[in-house]
Image (cartoon, rainbow, N blue to C red; front, side, top):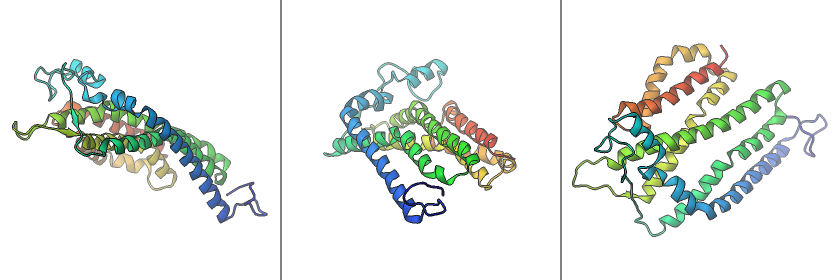
Length: 269
């Protein structure tokens, strides 16, 4: 790897310990930014919680209103209106320290999410000296595209996957004599998990491109196993949104399938 720092030898190559020092400095810079953002988010966490995180609990959430106008056969609401007035999911807290620890963990998670561009930029600065000039343009584009796709995935999870899953599971009852009381811990576990899963799933095109560059897969193989991929993506969509409504399943499956097809375009023949 090329280098110009004090850790470079006579040939201009950085030694092992110089790489370790540079990696440590990169990690420290990332941790500092995450910590500062976590403090800022901690101060605004109550507003974020009320206006963003708890928004899917209200029947006025944008997806519910949109689905109510598109389909009258969704599995919620006696009047078939997904955005029926009066709908709400109430949360309860049963552990003494849960609200405090969720306040802290939420601040950290949001800080990491907001820091993704900075973290990827620092990773780019770390790996860039070891790349040939012809490789730098492609890898730089991959870092940028990966950042954008991660945030698009988060948006898909927040506006589509999590609200649909919440609404189905919150109203599902094994017996009418067993009311649902959704705990704060359960809500947050599902909220964080589903949104992060969608953010990572939207990295599929970048992973496909990288695997192609490494020679692990080819476009011919991806096309050959397209039907298998469709089945696998349907299973993933069904697991993410465990509803019996084909319309809901379709709106989750469609972006996943488009990601697969986009990944094929990124792979050389």
